Image (cartoon, rainbow, N blue to C red; front, side, top):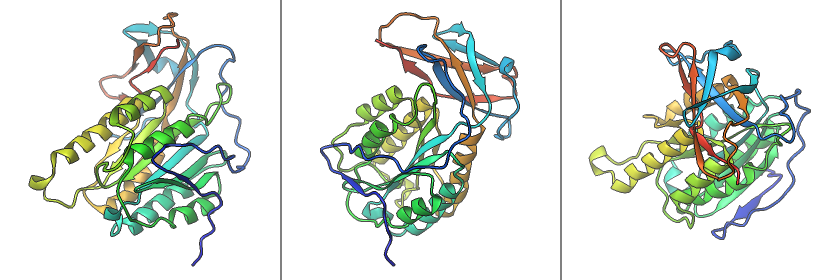
Length: 311
Protein backbone atom coordinates (compact mmCIF):
# COMPACT_ATOMS: atom_id res chain seq x y z
CA UNK A 1 0.00 0.00 0.00
CA UNK A 2 1.37 3.42 -0.96
CA UNK A 3 0.79 6.22 1.50
CA UNK A 4 0.62 9.79 0.26
CA UNK A 5 2.47 12.02 2.73
CA UNK A 6 1.51 15.57 1.93
CA UNK A 7 4.49 17.21 3.58
CA UNK A 8 7.68 15.36 4.29
CA UNK A 9 10.69 17.17 5.71
CA UNK A 10 13.93 15.83 7.07
CA UNK A 11 15.80 17.47 9.93
CA UNK A 12 19.37 16.20 10.16
CA UNK A 13 21.77 16.60 13.05
CA UNK A 14 22.52 20.21 11.99
CA UNK A 15 19.07 21.15 13.39
CA UNK A 16 17.89 23.27 10.45
CA UNK A 17 14.20 24.21 10.57
CA UNK A 18 11.95 24.37 7.55
CA UNK A 19 9.33 27.09 7.14
CA UNK A 20 6.76 25.15 5.11
CA UNK A 21 3.24 26.61 5.40
CA UNK A 22 0.67 24.86 7.59
CA UNK A 23 -2.16 22.88 6.02
CA UNK A 24 -5.41 24.81 5.90
CA UNK A 25 -7.83 23.70 8.63
CA UNK A 26 -11.53 24.15 9.22
CA UNK A 27 -12.57 27.53 10.57
CA UNK A 28 -12.17 27.37 14.37
CA UNK A 29 -14.70 28.58 16.90
CA UNK A 30 -14.00 32.07 18.19
CA UNK A 31 -11.12 31.68 20.67
CA UNK A 32 -10.52 33.88 23.70
CA UNK A 33 -8.61 37.06 22.88
CA UNK A 34 -5.98 38.74 24.99
CA UNK A 35 -5.54 42.47 25.13
CA UNK A 36 -3.07 43.56 22.47
CA UNK A 37 0.02 45.50 23.58
CA UNK A 38 -0.10 44.18 27.15
CA UNK A 39 2.08 41.27 28.28
CA UNK A 40 -0.45 38.87 29.73
CA UNK A 41 0.99 35.81 31.44
CA UNK A 42 -1.16 32.86 30.41
CA UNK A 43 -1.40 29.78 32.64
CA UNK A 44 -3.23 26.58 31.67
CA UNK A 45 -4.44 24.77 34.78
CA UNK A 46 -5.68 21.19 35.14
CA UNK A 47 -7.77 20.50 38.25
CA UNK A 48 -8.45 17.01 39.60
CA UNK A 49 -10.18 15.65 42.68
CA UNK A 50 -8.95 13.08 45.19
CA UNK A 51 -9.83 10.28 42.74
CA UNK A 52 -7.84 11.92 39.94
CA UNK A 53 -10.98 12.90 38.03
CA UNK A 54 -11.00 16.19 36.15
CA UNK A 55 -13.08 18.92 37.76
CA UNK A 56 -15.06 21.24 35.52
CA UNK A 57 -17.35 24.16 36.23
CA UNK A 58 -15.16 26.08 38.67
CA UNK A 59 -15.63 29.84 38.69
CA UNK A 60 -12.90 32.47 38.45
CA UNK A 61 -13.02 33.18 42.18
CA UNK A 62 -12.01 29.56 42.86
CA UNK A 63 -8.46 30.36 41.68
CA UNK A 64 -5.70 32.41 43.26
CA UNK A 65 -2.42 32.98 41.42
CA UNK A 66 0.90 33.86 43.01
CA UNK A 67 4.13 34.90 41.28
CA UNK A 68 7.24 34.54 43.43
CA UNK A 69 4.92 34.49 46.45
CA UNK A 70 3.07 37.70 45.49
CA UNK A 71 -0.63 37.44 44.74
CA UNK A 72 -1.62 38.52 41.22
CA UNK A 73 -4.89 39.99 39.96
CA UNK A 74 -6.50 37.89 37.24
CA UNK A 75 -7.27 39.82 34.06
CA UNK A 76 -8.53 36.84 32.10
CA UNK A 77 -10.34 33.59 32.87
CA UNK A 78 -11.79 30.92 30.59
CA UNK A 79 -12.97 27.37 31.07
CA UNK A 80 -13.79 26.77 27.39
CA UNK A 81 -11.31 24.68 25.42
CA UNK A 82 -8.87 26.66 23.28
CA UNK A 83 -7.92 25.43 19.81
CA UNK A 84 -5.01 23.00 20.07
CA UNK A 85 -1.70 22.79 18.24
CA UNK A 86 -0.26 19.36 19.08
CA UNK A 87 2.95 17.82 17.78
CA UNK A 88 2.74 14.02 17.90
CA UNK A 89 6.34 12.87 18.30
CA UNK A 90 6.99 9.15 17.78
CA UNK A 91 10.19 7.22 18.47
CA UNK A 92 10.95 5.08 15.40
CA UNK A 93 14.34 3.74 16.42
CA UNK A 94 15.10 0.06 15.90
CA UNK A 95 13.99 -0.88 19.43
CA UNK A 96 10.39 0.08 18.53
CA UNK A 97 10.03 -2.59 15.83
CA UNK A 98 7.82 -4.91 17.91
CA UNK A 99 5.82 -2.05 19.41
CA UNK A 100 5.11 0.28 16.50
CA UNK A 101 1.80 -1.31 15.44
CA UNK A 102 0.16 -0.79 18.84
CA UNK A 103 1.70 2.68 19.08
CA UNK A 104 0.29 3.63 15.67
CA UNK A 105 -3.22 2.50 16.61
CA UNK A 106 -3.20 4.36 19.92
CA UNK A 107 -1.87 7.53 18.30
CA UNK A 108 -4.45 7.29 15.51
CA UNK A 109 -7.30 7.28 18.03
CA UNK A 110 -5.81 10.40 19.61
CA UNK A 111 -5.72 12.14 16.20
CA UNK A 112 -9.34 11.19 15.48
CA UNK A 113 -10.37 13.15 18.56
CA UNK A 114 -9.26 16.45 17.02
CA UNK A 115 -11.96 19.11 16.89
CA UNK A 116 -12.61 21.85 14.32
CA UNK A 117 -9.92 24.46 14.73
CA UNK A 118 -7.36 22.05 16.19
CA UNK A 119 -4.11 21.38 14.36
CA UNK A 120 -1.63 18.53 14.65
CA UNK A 121 1.58 17.39 13.01
CA UNK A 122 3.22 13.95 12.96
CA UNK A 123 6.97 13.76 13.56
CA UNK A 124 9.07 10.60 13.70
CA UNK A 125 12.62 10.34 14.96
CA UNK A 126 15.33 7.72 14.93
CA UNK A 127 18.81 8.77 13.78
CA UNK A 128 17.22 11.86 12.24
CA UNK A 129 14.07 13.93 12.76
CA UNK A 130 11.45 13.79 10.05
CA UNK A 131 8.08 15.54 9.71
CA UNK A 132 5.75 13.03 8.08
CA UNK A 133 2.76 15.39 8.03
CA UNK A 134 2.84 19.13 8.57
CA UNK A 135 0.11 21.01 10.45
CA UNK A 136 -3.34 19.78 9.50
CA UNK A 137 -6.83 19.26 10.88
CA UNK A 138 -7.50 16.30 8.59
CA UNK A 139 -7.42 13.25 10.87
CA UNK A 140 -7.28 10.82 7.92
CA UNK A 141 -4.20 12.53 6.45
CA UNK A 142 -2.50 12.65 9.84
CA UNK A 143 -3.32 9.00 10.54
CA UNK A 144 -1.92 7.92 7.16
CA UNK A 145 1.34 9.66 8.01
CA UNK A 146 1.47 8.05 11.44
CA UNK A 147 0.93 4.58 9.99
CA UNK A 148 3.85 5.21 7.63
CA UNK A 149 6.40 5.17 10.45
CA UNK A 150 9.07 2.48 10.04
CA UNK A 151 11.46 1.63 12.92
CA UNK A 152 15.23 1.65 12.29
CA UNK A 153 18.41 3.28 13.50
CA UNK A 154 19.46 5.12 16.67
CA UNK A 155 17.57 7.61 18.87
CA UNK A 156 17.97 11.40 18.60
CA UNK A 157 15.38 12.17 21.26
CA UNK A 158 16.84 15.53 22.32
CA UNK A 159 17.22 16.72 18.71
CA UNK A 160 13.58 15.79 18.05
CA UNK A 161 12.31 17.72 21.04
CA UNK A 162 14.50 20.72 20.27
CA UNK A 163 13.48 21.22 16.65
CA UNK A 164 9.82 20.48 17.37
CA UNK A 165 9.69 23.04 20.19
CA UNK A 166 11.40 25.61 17.95
CA UNK A 167 8.68 25.25 15.34
CA UNK A 168 5.73 24.80 17.67
CA UNK A 169 6.42 28.06 19.48
CA UNK A 170 5.30 29.92 16.31
CA UNK A 171 1.80 28.45 16.53
CA UNK A 172 -0.79 30.99 17.69
CA UNK A 173 -0.59 34.75 18.27
CA UNK A 174 -0.90 36.93 21.40
CA UNK A 175 -4.34 38.11 20.25
CA UNK A 176 -5.61 34.68 19.21
CA UNK A 177 -3.75 32.11 21.33
CA UNK A 178 -3.65 28.36 20.92
CA UNK A 179 -2.99 25.68 23.51
CA UNK A 180 0.31 24.17 22.36
CA UNK A 181 1.61 20.76 23.38
CA UNK A 182 4.07 18.04 22.45
CA UNK A 183 2.95 14.42 22.91
CA UNK A 184 6.08 12.28 22.93
CA UNK A 185 6.30 8.48 22.75
CA UNK A 186 9.64 6.76 23.28
CA UNK A 187 10.95 3.47 24.63
CA UNK A 188 14.55 4.39 25.33
CA UNK A 189 17.25 6.89 26.05
CA UNK A 190 18.91 9.35 23.70
CA UNK A 191 21.86 7.80 21.86
CA UNK A 192 22.88 10.21 19.08
CA UNK A 193 21.72 13.83 19.60
CA UNK A 194 23.73 17.00 19.27
CA UNK A 195 21.27 18.88 21.49
CA UNK A 196 21.63 18.36 25.24
CA UNK A 197 19.15 17.81 28.07
CA UNK A 198 19.80 21.31 29.40
CA UNK A 199 19.21 22.93 26.02
CA UNK A 200 15.90 21.12 25.59
CA UNK A 201 14.71 21.94 29.09
CA UNK A 202 15.68 25.62 28.75
CA UNK A 203 13.90 25.92 25.40
CA UNK A 204 10.78 24.19 26.75
CA UNK A 205 10.58 26.66 29.62
CA UNK A 206 11.06 29.64 27.30
CA UNK A 207 8.56 28.40 24.71
CA UNK A 208 5.89 27.72 27.37
CA UNK A 209 4.72 24.54 25.63
CA UNK A 210 3.26 21.66 27.65
CA UNK A 211 5.05 18.36 27.14
CA UNK A 212 3.31 15.03 27.65
CA UNK A 213 5.86 12.23 27.68
CA UNK A 214 5.12 8.51 27.39
CA UNK A 215 8.06 6.22 28.05
CA UNK A 216 7.45 2.58 27.38
CA UNK A 217 8.82 0.11 29.85
CA UNK A 218 12.35 -1.16 29.27
CA UNK A 219 12.64 -4.75 28.10
CA UNK A 220 15.52 -5.27 30.50
CA UNK A 221 14.89 -6.60 34.01
CA UNK A 222 14.87 -3.78 36.55
CA UNK A 223 18.12 -5.00 38.09
CA UNK A 224 19.87 -4.68 34.73
CA UNK A 225 18.62 -1.24 33.76
CA UNK A 226 21.53 1.07 33.15
CA UNK A 227 21.98 4.28 35.08
CA UNK A 228 21.44 6.18 31.83
CA UNK A 229 17.91 4.75 31.59
CA UNK A 230 17.07 6.04 35.05
CA UNK A 231 18.44 9.44 34.04
CA UNK A 232 16.27 9.37 30.89
CA UNK A 233 13.18 8.77 33.03
CA UNK A 234 14.18 11.59 35.35
CA UNK A 235 14.69 13.98 32.43
CA UNK A 236 11.22 13.29 31.02
CA UNK A 237 9.69 13.67 34.48
CA UNK A 238 11.29 17.10 34.99
CA UNK A 239 10.42 18.20 31.44
CA UNK A 240 6.73 17.36 31.89
CA UNK A 241 6.55 18.80 35.42
CA UNK A 242 8.14 22.14 34.55
CA UNK A 243 5.96 22.71 31.48
CA UNK A 244 2.63 21.74 33.04
CA UNK A 245 2.33 18.46 31.15
CA UNK A 246 2.43 14.89 32.43
CA UNK A 247 4.72 11.89 32.20
CA UNK A 248 3.53 8.29 31.90
CA UNK A 249 5.37 5.00 32.37
CA UNK A 250 2.83 2.37 31.26
CA UNK A 251 3.55 -1.19 32.39
CA UNK A 252 2.00 -2.74 29.29
CA UNK A 253 1.97 -1.77 25.64
CA UNK A 254 -1.81 -2.17 25.57
CA UNK A 255 -2.09 0.64 28.13
CA UNK A 256 -1.19 3.15 25.41
CA UNK A 257 -4.83 3.60 24.41
CA UNK A 258 -5.82 4.79 27.87
CA UNK A 259 -2.72 6.97 28.19
CA UNK A 260 -3.44 8.87 24.97
CA UNK A 261 -7.08 9.20 26.05
CA UNK A 262 -5.93 10.66 29.34
CA UNK A 263 -3.76 13.23 27.56
CA UNK A 264 -6.66 14.23 25.29
CA UNK A 265 -8.93 14.65 28.30
CA UNK A 266 -6.32 16.75 30.08
CA UNK A 267 -5.95 19.14 27.15
CA UNK A 268 -9.74 19.50 26.88
CA UNK A 269 -10.44 20.13 30.56
CA UNK A 270 -7.93 22.85 31.37
CA UNK A 271 -8.80 26.31 32.63
CA UNK A 272 -6.97 29.31 31.20
CA UNK A 273 -5.91 32.06 33.58
CA UNK A 274 -4.28 35.32 32.57
CA UNK A 275 -2.66 38.11 34.55
CA UNK A 276 -0.37 41.08 34.08
CA UNK A 277 2.59 40.61 36.39
CA UNK A 278 2.98 43.10 39.23
CA UNK A 279 6.74 42.72 38.77
CA UNK A 280 7.66 45.35 36.18
CA UNK A 281 11.38 44.50 36.13
CA UNK A 282 12.67 43.48 32.69
CA UNK A 283 15.48 41.30 33.97
CA UNK A 284 14.79 38.07 32.11
CA UNK A 285 14.80 36.08 35.35
CA UNK A 286 12.82 32.95 36.14
CA UNK A 287 9.55 33.70 37.94
CA UNK A 288 7.81 30.93 39.83
CA UNK A 289 4.03 30.51 39.54
CA UNK A 290 1.72 28.91 42.07
CA UNK A 291 -2.02 28.41 41.58
CA UNK A 292 -4.31 27.57 44.48
CA UNK A 293 -7.95 26.61 44.43
CA UNK A 294 -10.55 27.51 47.03
CA UNK A 295 -10.80 23.82 47.93
CA UNK A 296 -7.10 23.05 48.21
CA UNK A 297 -7.70 20.13 50.56
CA UNK A 298 -9.89 18.28 48.07
CA UNK A 299 -8.59 19.49 44.71
CA UNK A 300 -5.19 19.38 43.05
CA UNK A 301 -4.02 21.77 40.36
CA UNK A 302 -1.26 21.26 37.81
CA UNK A 303 0.32 23.96 35.63
CA UNK A 304 3.65 25.18 34.37
CA UNK A 305 6.01 26.03 37.24
CA UNK A 306 6.98 29.45 35.95
CA UNK A 307 8.26 31.56 33.09
CA UNK A 308 11.13 33.85 32.15
CA UNK A 309 10.40 37.56 32.52
CA UNK A 310 10.94 39.92 29.60
CA UNK A 311 14.29 41.58 28.99
